[in-house]
Figure (cartoon, each protein chain N blue to C red):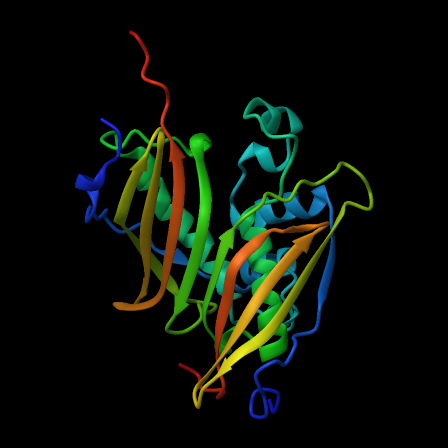
Length: 140
Length: 142
């Protein structure tokens, strides 16, 4: 059974805590050319949240009910809404939920949301639209 | 931080020009943990019907966001960023790589926030669409 609208609302267990470090902020800031964060690596660039959100994505691809494969998935759009930036020392957990599924032909547009929480407060919401292409039904 | 106190609609962010090479994609892979081989192996990319290695969409979004943080004075100022990925950015296996340009313009100013419309172009292609960032005008640690 491929992913369908009936999976909307499905929510996965929180990821193990990820500890944000100065070294990782610095490395990431260098990779995306964020000179503000390179000068002061105590505050993470806005898209650093993806490093942690991506760990939550694993639950989606591991869910046997959905039949999703990473190599058949294209990233359509991405939003980060920050209550505050991630900072050095934050212990972050991530919870993924399926927000919307629209199917067209062999393609499924899937909107997922990852909430990043530090000390019981949601500090960032990462929302992604993914285009997943189903495998052709095999005759077997 | 007076930049955002006097900001008006139509203000342009400094243009950011990046000569993107395969080393940048490898660096982003390491920094982000996204080791999908289509971002470093022509063979893997071609097996999926792509012309060759392409950069992570999140690299492009990250650079666009950096244009905002560098202008606004850091990530404490950024309330949100949105990007639609419209075209893949192919990276030739050359020393000079490919030029990607990032621009931004203020489209809205309220008492609390500034909205910046973002663009990224590679050759004749706009590689992101509907991209925007919302920036806090006041420097407050939230």
